[in-house]
Image 1 (cartoon, helix red, strand yellow):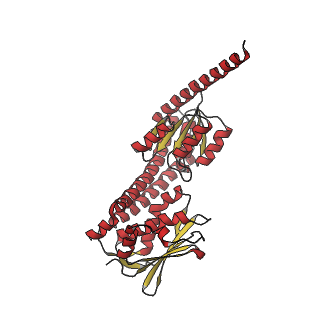
Image 2 (image 1 turned 45 degrees about the vertical axis):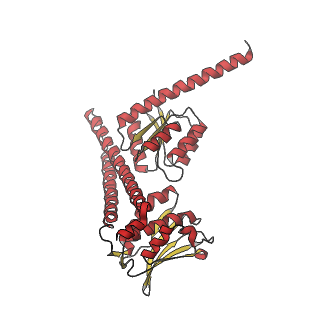
Image 3 (image 1 turned 90 degrees about the vertical axis):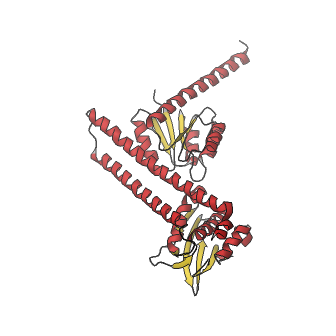
Length: 221
Length: 142
């Protein structure tokens, strides 16, 4: 276990830090909106004290805004909690669809900064695999981060997971149709080590603008 | 005096609510949800102060600040941020930001900074006008 953490090295800590900073930034935005709506409510109270009539529709709009942000904050915290617990057990059974959704949510702000939209293919059925959740999340983030350097003209990357025989494929679709060499996606020794630990292979299919991670149903023993 | 403010933030709900509160405090507020839109507006209208989010999709706040200052060095920019690191703060000040406020911000503090920004802009504009007048007078040799 320790050896695997060491494989990630500084970049592993940076991954945790980067995601935590992004989450806190998102939460700050949620709080800022709630703060302004609370302030607006207070402004209305002061106006009412001075005898001004307040339109109930305006109050309903404030209440709606606050409820919307509470829901948004709850989603962010749920995702943060899932991410934090990814370090609990070195090896565990996870729903790959849920892991993809978590990584996409964590990466959304970074993608937006690069004017890229991230989505996952909707599915109702869980896809269970046994893996190292934190290492897998890190690998997915690295793939996404680098895929964004090669995003296609639509500026949209869609992640999906499917099973093929004994293997599981994670597909990153929406990349440029220009040829991409694998070293350009995963240039470092750490990247290669991470692929080895998780028993993954990475392939690019530039003709269809795809990058595929192939992993066994049980990975990272 | 009614200050003319440009509020720039990609969070639409934030920008709209804050604008409503500022308008009720007798400020003239225009909003933009991207730095690109804001730069266009700066070219078309005059503002006493710009309240700018530091992190936005596409062109971020620091890049926008640089572009604003290039367009009009007299414009006073107050940066708003969800994550005020010392490093970012120093960078912002070096680029000519007047102030940096952390979200969620207190409206009274923001209003005070806007008034200061507006006064500072007036001083700079007056100095510029005076210099122009002096240049004209000197050039004519009256």
